[in-house]
Each structure stands twice: as C-alpha cells, then as structure tokens.
Length: 123
Image (cartoon, rainbow, N blue to C red):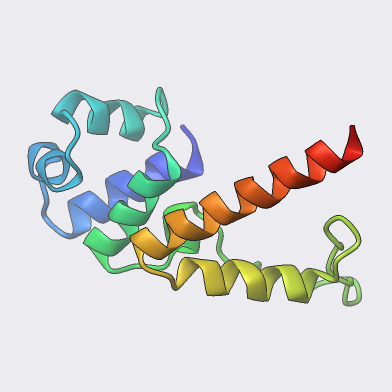
C-alpha cells in the first residue's frame, strides 16, 4: 500500500467520513475512493488538492511526506532543478499552490504559450 493510500484511509477514519461521503465531496465514485485507499489508483493533482482541502491538511500530509526525525549526517544542500536553486523552485511552487483554481489554470495556459513560442523559435 502506498503512503498516499495509507494516509487517505487514516484521515478518512479519523474524521469519521465514509468512502461514499468522501466520494460525493470529491465528485468521484465510491469505488474510486476505495481504489485510492487500496493503492490501485492514484488521483490527479486537482483531486489531491480537493482531498487536502476536504480534510484541511497540507498537501505534504496527503502525500505522506513528513520530515525525518532521524539524525542527519550533516546538512545536505537542496538539489537544484534545471539549474535553479531549490529554494527558488520551492518558493515558486508555493506561490503557485496559493493561487485560486482559475488562476492556476491561467498560469498553466501562459506557461504552455511560452513553451510553444520557445519551440517555434528553436525550429
């Protein structure tokens, strides 16, 4: 069972929510929620956001990403992404996550437009 599957089931049970109730809130079938909990299916990003909102928890909690409590062997530097310092990427993702659903779509549309323009110039 994936971390997500375990966390989802735990949250649902702790909050005393049935699979049917959660399914109705998410706009999916009860069997879909069951498959999420069994690790047989994974939700898309928007559904993950809806689950986090429903349970009023951080997206990291939904994905089972908790900070390690084990002592580290020296601090490791964050890994850069495509040449960008990791903290800048984290800040960008955080800013994106705070946008409304409509503004997120606008940002994605704009990025797609920029990507297409870049590809056209590369030809």
